[in-house]
Image (cartoon, rainbow, N blue to C red; front, side, top):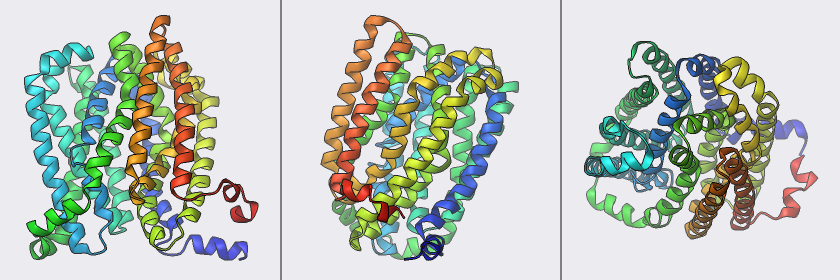
Length: 437
């Protein structure tokens, strides 16, 4: 096939590349605004404020894994729209019930949790955290529904709205809210809540008559049983994966200071910018694309294409951030963030590899091999604890991050090889010049 014909195929209506570009448009605009606003926000808030926000966001991210029992991932799988709607309502119902349970737990154990995490005003967050968990679950469900229906324009637009509201509220609260440490938290919750509300209303208006017609508790429980492997095999590995990613925040906050956790947090925000811009959207498109190609026996080819796309984006973004890290943090963010520049250079190699591998891991669910991912997640969690624990004898956060980087490079290389094995990708074909061209 000629190169021109191949390129034309990439950009036809509904193609993988076109869907990715649709999502990237709104996301790129949103994070372009973020990149411009971040230096101002970093000068408004202290490293301590970033540290407390990082702990809050880590708690929400970890507990949000279980809020829908992972049934939100199954929204894209049913062949009929009626079944997909029932999975959507099931996921939203589970999100509400689970959030209420988390609220009760936080109310009963607020004092022990406050001491464990080193946050004095955790009592203020008892109300905010469960609400944030529910909103996150709601947003995830609606996002997967839009992925199922391939309404990527709406998803892209509201991605921009969410980030724009976040920036606006962070700046306003930074200037006018007395408690500087809570400004970032309140802004995040409000922006996600408003974006979820607008998005939910839009989706509801499109499917409200179909909900009345096709909603069935009998069908819902049948689908709940049909996709039971998601809560059985996906909650634990996803929980371990997210807790492993967030573990350094808890570690640095507990054994060092909130300021150190804040420096690490801003460093990660910069390193994850390529992921936020592009890779998260590629992952959403991949999910639907991989499901289709599984049935068409083209999964290995799609996996190779996705790998090289992710490789190019991650390497390019990672190298640029590594080169300009010192200038970005000291000149743009202020001298108080000089330590974050050092952390960024230490963590860059492992973050590049993680951004390549993580979006491809959805293949375990698609191929119904969640137990393999679960085994890797358990091993990764154990090794992360071991490496961070080993670093305590040096009493230096920088050494802790060096060891964390080494651990991630080892474990994510193993993870990538497992992904290739599950999707039947041969290394000889992966590096085939004919395939790449």
